[in-house]
Length: 377
Image (cartoon, rainbow, N blue to C red):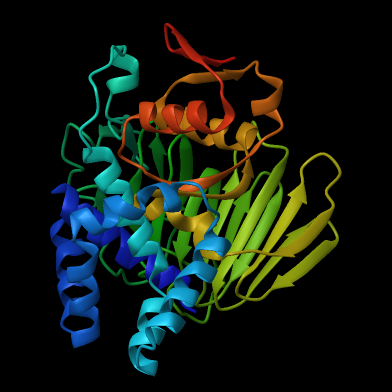
């Protein structure tokens, strides 16, 4: 089951439905639609608003694993052909995401909310610090001659001849509520999440390709003879021709490296582990110990596809993620909410009130807004 691909398809379909799909996403979605008649038929079914509304309550309340089981049972009852069943069984996420955008567009009784709860995220400041000391606001300005725009929200460095001397490092910084894409000079693609910092050379030279991360980023590493190393809070993630997500925020007790494809080696001090696809290494920052576990890798990388997917995740962890994205402070006073786990999908560019209303409904808690602070009680 290729859930990483499914999350991508889900995000494109939801973005088109909302009317904010980028030209690059549009082209990739059209390519997927042209791939088979089954894909086109499935897309048509996902756009049937009334059908989605009928089953929306069911989707909102179940976990991803439970949703998989329900979709498979439905496939079995309908006795689909093997090929159609295979396609349908691996695209449960597009159905869930399509339901999410319908949820956002449902007619509801008007309610009084503050401007903080109505604010659309994704407008955080993004700054490029050039090797010569200049600073460029990438949201408001042009990046200059050093790099070029591949598409809105992404920088692309052209392939470069290996320089004879060090050409210096650039630094890409995203504020709370910001995100940005980057294509390095070796062709490696990087997605930088909110409140993150990536230091990287203008052109790689020497026996290894090394970058330095604070925060969270997803890497799709270009193949090459030189190893690719990500340094994050005393931990090193080494990969060659690999896709993986790395999370290492200063307010988290662990560094997480989640492998989507290929192989990766995670090391700290004298300890190291080698990951296979679908495995995650968790490095305890205080002790330096490394543990591994099997995970749904696409869930941990869903943020780069305009989604937050939560599968049995604690509300405390979730609120830290959302606080960075929405540039707010969230305090949990309710004991039942503090110890709760949460399942669901939240479109990344929805207002935070969508998440808060879900939590209010499921856990019977109230929320109040005090300046830029949200209190769950």
